[in-house]
Amino acid sequence: MKLISHLQPAGPGLYVAPLINAVILLLVFFFLGSSFIIQSGVPVALPSAPSRLVGFDRADIVTISAAPSSKIYLNGHQTSLDSLLQKLDEGESRLKRVVIYADQQAPYGRVMEVSSLLMTAGFETAFGTTPAAAP
Image: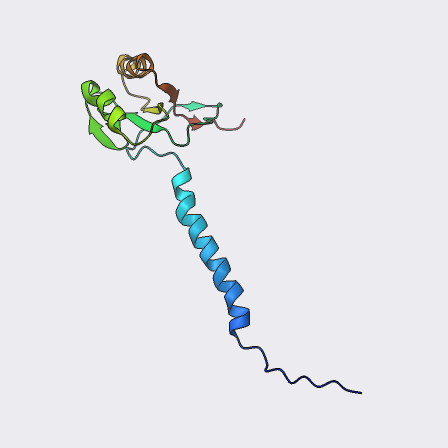
């Protein structure tokens, strides 16, 4: 005996809905995933090192450009050494973590001025580098 179904055939919406869900999830992943990368916004040539930066994903970023000007930037906006701590205290981040991106050609004294100022004020400080090439 042959069974006959009296239900209406399923429309194309049944097959399109999961596809739309998958596309929306991919879009959300790529839009939010781009904020997981720590970037300074100011192009600098970082030194290479084999170490990895862990635990500084929501840190403020201080960038020191190359000599002779060796300007200081906080989260992509130029600032002076005198107003750096004030702007960090006014910022949204309360974690007191800072990543210093110093160009290879930046004066060593300038990098030490910034890092000692930050550490004296109680900030956890890390230096940003590029991954070393595998041997």
